[in-house]
Figure 1 (cartoon, rainbow, N blue to C red):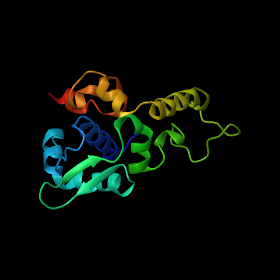
Figure 2 (tube, one colour):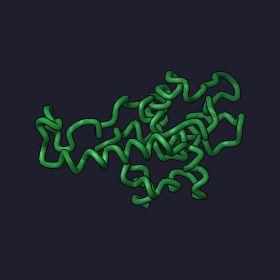
Figure 3 (cartoon, rainbow, N blue to C red):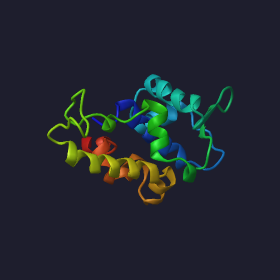
Figure 4 (cartoon, rainbow, N blue to C red):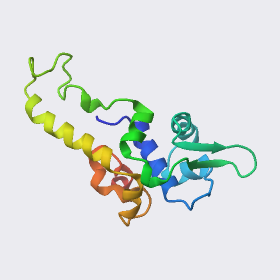
Length: 156
């Protein structure tokens, strides 16, 4: 698995926030209901986005979350690193501890270009790109089923 479950959820939550009008605060319970996840779990995940400065959190009346930066300035790579740090794709695809050019696994040479393409995709794709794709909600990311974002759609 390249993305942890919490990372997939963070991307979906960030995408939800990117689709909101500028200045609109979205309460965690509203986002959780839209995504079909536990409010408590989502609160833990979004706290990571808040602590890394991607999302602002407001308390009190009218409380909620909003993106700290414009969706055009937030790449998927930034969201992923905020939640899980490095990608599992940085590791050996077969799970070997020692996998390198000098000591390659059976898939090493095939995995390296895929890993690079995947990293490049995350670096160049912004939340705004996903919003502009013309779809609504987390169904906007059908091409990203590879990273598990299309799970909700498949369950319908």
